[in-house]
Length: 404
Image (cartoon, rainbow, N blue to C red; front, side, top):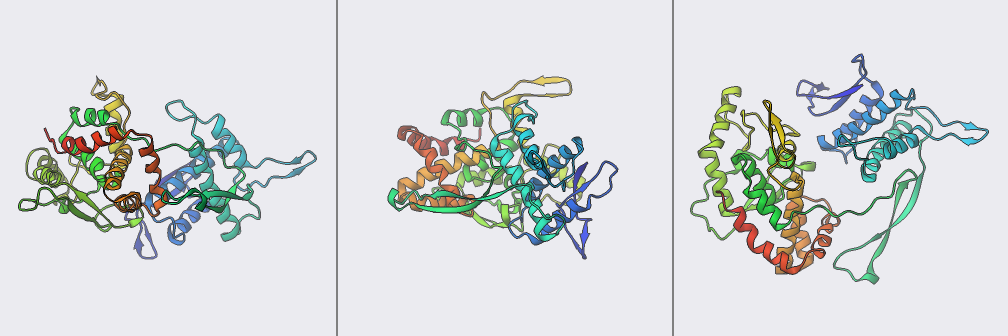
């Protein structure tokens, strides 16, 4: 059993719909119930607009259904009442297997948060099967009302409110973890390592603007221009448009580049490595590339290409029989650069106008739908010393603008 993602050739009622995961069994026959659910998720569930969201649901269902097949179970098996009580549901057994026996490729157990996310997506499938498709008359879990505190960093403790939300009896406890942020020394090592011009510019874009992985990979060439004549002390506003690039939730937003960063990007489009990769793209597709950043052979970056490129830096890799050692002494991912940008931008804006304005500013730069998502970076600041933050603030722009 596996799933494939549709291309532009997939037409539904006269319109092409690429990016939809569809399921097939081992004989490559479509699995009707899962495919109907995916079409519901794409076309009728307003909160699931992103192809990345569709993929996350599909991956969770694929893992669950493969486990069912391996154990001779069916997704619509209803727990029976026996003389010893009610049977354990298949979903509960899957959750226990995920927590105790399922391993990641590196051999480590799955985090509780990962298991909870997968189980929640499978629960949504069961809810669809019961309430929308009417394929079953039960749910393999129990919904309970749980209370959680509501806190705002600007509010006094006695004004904190309470919220209530439905939760599942299968939800595992999660440890609250702060997003990983690079230290000043780690950023210095990262920006100084010997890598391609393209990858270094992509690093600086994510570290300096908070772009997501897919946003950096699909950043349009048309956004780059010659900044000569503009004030070098002021940042340049770039309006990101979902019609031109991939943006989470198709939500437009503004980011800000330094004059020096825009000048470096413009130079990249006119000389050296950037021009060579653009020519290779033109040779293959017959048109000028719409994307700013391309891989070495002129191809657009794949979904996992940038993540794999970062992994080679700290893990090393083998190519054509030769083993290349790591060039970094620490682990780094594209999203860690976004976390680092958010933390330092919040500190900088808080120094100027206070935490309330700073949170709203960073929320808009990151494209968060809620300011509550942004508040986690306040806790990152609380763990850092003022002297360290001041040094960060003074040196980061200088390191970013050094293109040697």
